[in-house]
Amino acid sequence: MSALKQKKTDKQQDNNTAEKNPHLKKYRWKKGESGNPNGRPKNGFALNDHIRELANVEMKDKKSMLENVVARVYEEALDGNMTAVSFLADRMLGRPNQSIGIREETNEPIKIIDMGDNISDDLEN
Image (cartoon, rainbow, N blue to C red):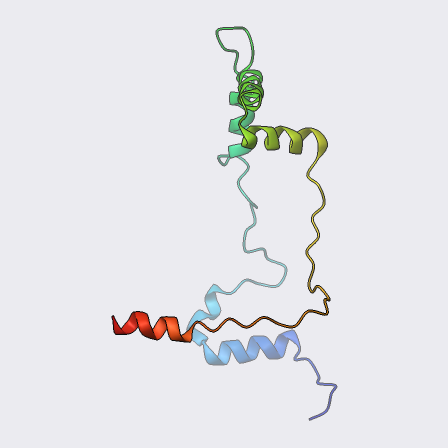
């Protein structure tokens, strides 16, 4: 087979499809016709928009819900909650770059741990 194969033209592909599935021919789109002429609906439920709306809701203390949440995270961090500390540090300072070493080069021999005897002893009991 040659490395340069000729592509089938659109007409050849249409004929092959029509031959294999003649009952589907009437459902095919015509050239230049879109399968979704109206596009994606604009009024779908958008979680981000809903969260933003809730974040701006004013609470009893005249602060927004977002301000109260952030204040609560600060309180948790001051009480020693390391998850809250990490959350705040990530938001204020940005997450540190993390590199993953693929292989460490050492001159130490490979350590082999034989666990076969222990497993067979456990199975017998």
